[in-house]
Length: 386
Ligand SMILES: Cc1ncc(COP(=O)(O)O)c(C=O)c1O
Image (cartoon, rainbow, N blue to C red; front, side, top):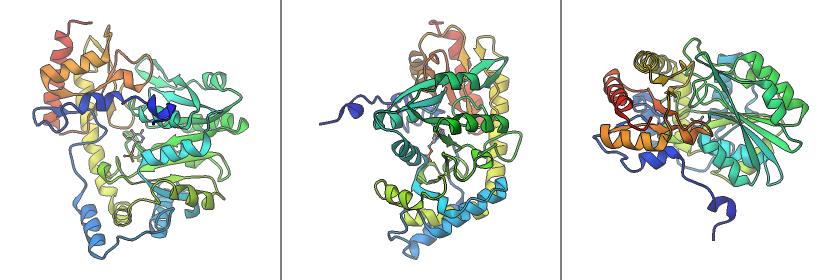
C-alpha cells in the first residue's frame, strides 16, 4: 500500500530509545527537546477563556489576522524589521511548516542540502518529497562549531533547490553570525536556492536577547522561508503552534497550500498564542536564566571530563558531547537507560559521523540535572565498549 518514499522512512533515534520507557517515573528524561516546566498559567488561562467564548470555528487558512499582526509586531520589536502580515502563515507546528517548506520547494528531480549535525526530522521531511539530499557537516575545532561556506559552494548541484539550516542549532548549540547569513544568502540567491531557515531557538541564546535572523538580512523578494515556533520560547511543545514567513506576493498560494495541511492551527490555540506574544517576555527571561544555569552545570561536569569532548553551546538547550573512542551511540544510550535510568538521544540520529556522540537537553531543574549527570559520568567511566 505504501509508496516507496514512505515505506523507506525509518523512526528517528530519539523516539526509538524513548518510546520504550516513555513516562516511566524511574527515568530522568533528557531525550526530548523540552524542559520540565509546563506552559505558564496566563497562557493556559487564555486558551481556557478562548474555549469558553466558543473560539472553536474554522478561521482564515493562513491563520487569524490578529495573530499574524501580533507576530509581525513581535518581529518588528525584536529585529526592527517590517514584515507585512501577508507574509506570515500559521499552519500549526514548526514541524508542519518544515514539511510545507519542503513540499513547496522540492520534487523528485531536485536536490537539497542539510547543514548537519541536525534535527533528525528534517531528512524525513525531505525524503517524503522524493528529492535527493546531501549533508554538509559543521566543523568542530578548538571547542567551537563553524560553517565552511566554501564547502557549501562545492556541494551545490545544478538541481539544488533548497538548503535547510537551523540556528541556534539542535543539537550543537551553534549560532550563525549575521555576516555568514549575508554570505550564504548571496550564494543561494545567485543559484536560485531557497533557504529554509529554522529559527525555533531564536530566543535561546546566552549572550544576547535574540539570535541573528535571516529576516534581518533578506529582502522581501528573496527566496527565504523563516520558520519559528511557540514550542521552545514559551514552553508550549504540546500545543503544536508556530509560524512561517515567506517571500512577498505568495499569500494566495500560501492560503491554498495551508488548506491541504491543517488549514491553520486550532482557533483557540491561536488566541492563546497572541497572549504569549503580548505577555511572554518575563517568561522568556526566566526560562533563559534556568537554561543558563543548566548549561553551566553541564559544562562543569562533562566539559572537564577526560573521556569527553564538549563544545559549549552558544544557543538552544542541548549539550552534544563526544565520548572519546565510543563505537555505537545506540548501544551506549540503551545501556545508560537500562543501568542508570537516564534517557538521552543517540548521536547517530543527528547525521553521519556522530556515532560517538549523544545529546541531552539541559532544560531541567538543577537537582534533576545534577543527578542525571552524576549517573551519566558513572556510566561513561564504567562503559566497557570504548
Ligand atoms: C530544530 C527544530 N525545528 C523544529 C522543531 C519542531 O518544533 P515544533 O514543536 O513547533 O514542531 C524542533 C523540535 O525539537 C527542532 O529542534
